[in-house]
Length: 93
Image 1 (cartoon, helix red, strand yellow):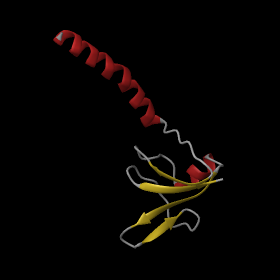
Image 2 (cartoon, rainbow, N blue to C red):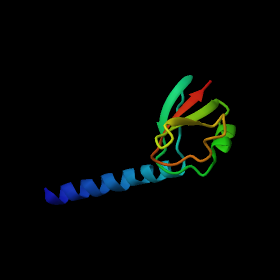
Image 3 (tube, rainbow, N blue to C red):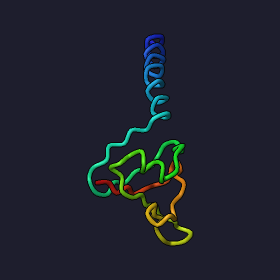
């Protein structure tokens, strides 16, 4: 019984480790019209302007800066880099 458990656990980890690896390379996003709340699991290799240019449905990206007590916006040029583990508000068409 113990051999079965360890064998099943090994197969489970082996199968799903490939899925998690592929998600770190490409992070698909399903955006609805309006405001979407999102966070990246890995740091995107693009700046906010490049990210918006590669996704024509995205209009603006916002994030909250607690140090300044205000929102940073891609439209105003105050948001430049996207980071992992930070919450973003993405406005899409």
